[in-house]
Length: 615
Ligand code: G6P
Image 1: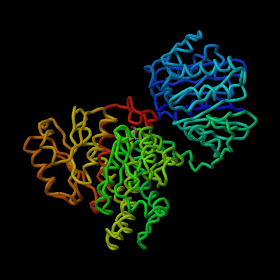
Image 2: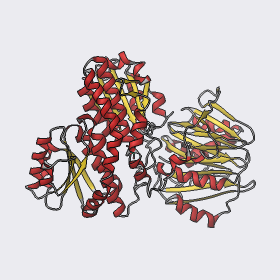
Image 3: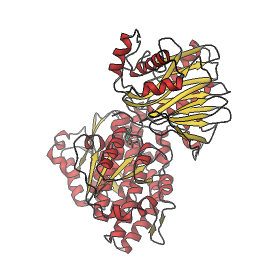
């Protein structure tokens, strides 16, 4: 939801800011812009389109000199994506420049007030209102930039991560955050500011992550002063050592991040259980669960809140928790949950699942649940993210950075973590026998190898992708544990190839979607041996008798479905609860190859963003 990046120091800012924007493009990519200060002039270039479009334009439009720079890559909220609405935005005097990720909700009232005071606006954005509000405060109150930003922000309602520069105070950048992430990279005599640490990882391992409601004045040759926006109190900043490395955020020889991330799943899954699970000893250690075992295991109900792919992981978890730990589970879209006056009690445990840990609706749902006394548990991928901090306890997925907008390894590692939690709870409650528990752990340990085997179907999947690449619609069917996988498979196809796809519980097909089936319609059916196999085979028969094209994901060695299907993709056998970790793989590859064959931008599909920090 917009990426921001800034630099102040002794190097040329332009290449740092440009590269930083390329790395943050997953957050939004409908327009981009950069402002540079070369010691006397503040210059800016911005455009609708991607960072690559900006580069071409900027280098012919302005000189790239300067040791201070601010850059922005946008996912539009207020105002359509066009050159004028792109960030950065100047204040009316041209002295101040701002970049902003978030929404200023009361911008309209503020704008009217500023117009009365003679301010004019070029864009439709809330951000241009904010920069002029800051300018107005400087003029009215005769204060420095930091103070003016603070006073202005105390008049706003909304969410933001901002960076502001004043050309008459060229040795500082002022940043602030509320609801949108902001990291400050602390180098030798130089500072970086960005939505995450990826823009500065090759320059420094030291970062300060601002907390919600904090602002900082970043001063060249000096230091970083952090304060609370509300009451001006000074905060001692915690400088964290980053674990991220450059390799993790580069494509490593793959054509797209999505493909790289699909292939990273064997390692991502083992990284997620490694150190937690001792299969031979029959032990799972997870501090976030161990320290709160009574509270979680005695929950009357577990409510899972999430969005998008994470919501699908929540649906898989519903099956696992109810099956293994015998705790009732409800899975909710965070955006619905938070606005429907839900009944939550102190005996409930609310689990938020979020790759980014920043999704605004999931964050709001957790806050609501906590207010009502529930225990909040986070399953996040990004360490130190807002949701991971807001929850009472949690367990990270160790997927590493996920950059492709369509989520892949985050999904399978979320399922891995949730399975471990369910097993731990089941063992504690006695709802799973020791031998069954041990067997699950041993099977989990075999999953990475089995994922590798599932990835070997790539050539066959390319053939299937080629055959059906022009299909206007596609149906995905699954039952039990594999019903959420069907939803996820359909979402992947929609997201990156723009083909309309629906996921359905296989048995529900006859209550509607069966009417769609004709000889043009590809139907992807997950028909693994474990879990309602015979019933799914009957569903396949129903499709076949209506001439639908059947692509079946089956357990290795299956002959029955092979007789019926147009294509079969085999995955290794495993226990039912773990099948989603394998059946997901061919569906990810299928959508990937179709999108590539259609010439779509796989890593940055239109209209989407990786991290949705607005409601
Ligand atoms: C966006 C992304 C999806 C993701 C969803 C939830 O829509 O494009 O890939 O599943 O947000 O994100 P989260 O970070 O909370 O898992």
